[in-house]
Picture 1 (tube, each protein chain N blue to C red):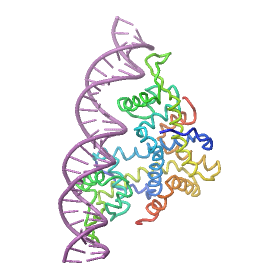
Picture 2 (tube, rainbow over the protein chains, first blue to last red):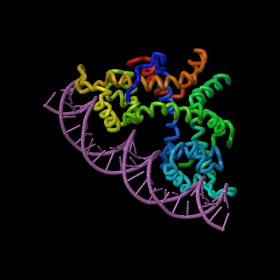
Picture 3 (cartoon, rainbow over the protein chains, first blue to last red):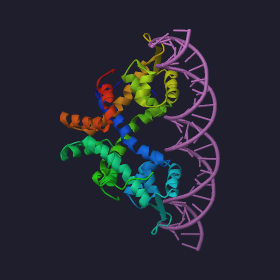
Picture 4 (cartoon, each protein chain N blue to C red):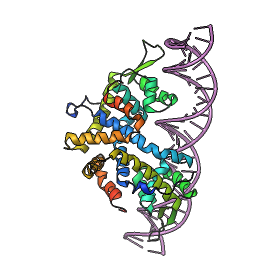
Amino acid sequence: MQRPDADPAAGTPAYDLIELFFFAYRDFVSDPDRILAEYGFGRAHHRVLHFVDRQPGLTIAELLDILRITKQSLNRVLKELIEKGFITSSTGTADRRQRHLQTTAAGHDLALSFSQLQTQRIMRAMGDLDPGAKRLISGYLLRMIDADDRAHVERLVFGGKN
Amino acid sequence: MQRPDADPAAGTPAYDLIELFFFAYRDFVSDPDRILAEYGFGRAHHRVLHFVDRQPGLTIAELLDILRITKQSLNRVLKELIEKGFITSSTGTADRRQRHLQTTAAGHDLALSFSQLQTQRIMRAMGDLDPGAKRLISGYLLRMIDADDRAHVERLVFGGKN
DNA sequence: TGAGATATGTCAATAAGGCTGACTTAAAAA
DNA sequence: TTTTTAAGTCAGCCTTATTGACATATCTCA
């Protein structure tokens, strides 16, 4: 429980970037909240819908790995999305133990409307930056991710299905 | 409840930046989590401790305004931080209805250790970028914040006490 | 083929961190 | 003096997460 004395090598904390990141993320996730409330959904539903839409055919285990939650937590949210007709679950053909998840047409439209809202905010913030500046920002965000997870995220973000 | 058809003007969603922002923020807040658990604290405690440490003398109303939670939610967390000796609350002199919050020495040390952890991650991600690139990134994050809140955040982040 | 491992699903209890609504007290302001 | 404001508190509820235990179907390997 003993905190070490302030590490002299740590220098002055980057309070500006710490706080800007906090406020930027808060507003970034707030856009979809208004729509989610209309459906009785929360942010957990948003996350599940997003990743299923982006990776059709995703299995339960893969989804748990991305979200880093327990299957009990996922189950309630996923069940609601399936019951309300936004996601379908189908038994695997190669391995019949697995379930492959997909968005329905309604699910895809909803996921797309969330992504478009968030893209609007990103584009407003990018303004008229040149492509080099955009690469710089996405590189920065990538390096903010734990090093031992970075390859996994890169595959997921840039590489379609694995 | 009717979602509009996909806005043709919206273009292709920026899936890469949406997802990078999600994963980056997750890892960014995960660093302090390990320490918080030692004290039986959660992220709510971290946020309160951080802003009180950054703005000594902050009142309850000002803190509620920054965190955008209800005073009932704040109260439980704040009470624990006071009881465990990380924050002090003192009656205002000019206006005796107000309470002015401050971190104790222990509270300041704890807040500093969180900020240093997060600064390490930020500096690793910044790598050897030049100062112009750093300004570009903080400008981007600032513009991700709701326009009508940006001035408030700027004062708070760059301007010390209001 | 049979044993064990794996993928999923489910029940129950618990916790953190939010919320609304109602009400009190003390102090300032009109 | 009346009204408004700042803070504190009680009670109940919701969402999203947790752990632990267990059931079922299916695959894999010896």
